[in-house]
Image (tube, rainbow, N blue to C red; front, side):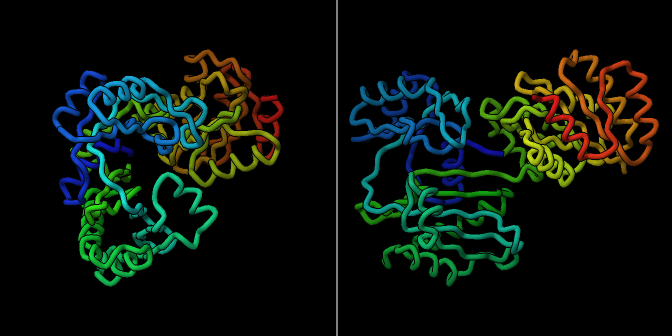
Length: 385
């Protein structure tokens, strides 16, 4: 789960991670009131959307007066940010954050994330923070510092000091840096985060370290423990289908292809997507109905595949805990409800497979049944054109 920058900064404040004062606005009039509360000499008006690249898209503007704050807010609210992270549809900006401006001397990058390979938390930092951090990571990886942290012991002072020295934090600010990093770690652990990022962390001309931007993501599997975090969810920022899938405990990710996929098990889903690609097709989604799917969940899953970009649907089920006849019943119910008008290719195998095939055959629907994944994928690609 993702949250907005202003919400991340509110969490930073609670965990004593130094940041600026700021207020969120949904209209230019509200932005003016935010600026008046700050009573600053210069302001920054920032688009609030779940994506990076806001500055490059014109979603971050410096304002030297309240009048300029109003003009910036008017221009940013309602704009659509389009970049690699958002896809072609982009992200509609509904809110702006108004903060005071700071005198930046130096920018850094600092984050905490999960390192699955080492079953640890990893500090990722760089002395070259800011809008070009992704390009730096790709083209100058030597500028990126990584330090593994055991979740059992937490961050040790020597680890934080090592990171500070590697990225060039001034000696006068090292203790301040260590405290900030440990507070970020506390937030990360206590709120079951998957990412806590500050980009940039800045050294000001006055010699202070301030997080002037923040990103916090949470482990979806742990949000039930944090009702306060769930309240921060903004469904406007989420893909409608992915949100709907979540309501039915389905794992769904939208993609750009033309072949809708419904599979049980993440590994089998990945294999299905790979073989579709091998035959020259592109999957329209990742959809895992799980190992304990019911007829209702299968029906909900099938409805998610109804999309104008989908030219064919491939169902690939290996019945173990979830039985093939349950899947077949869900397919038939959903196909009738949505008025299916694209080719449907189904490969069933495993528990109750013969009964599942009978249900599909008796339905009277036009279904292309295949006995193996290879022939099913090939057929789906052919039918999708």
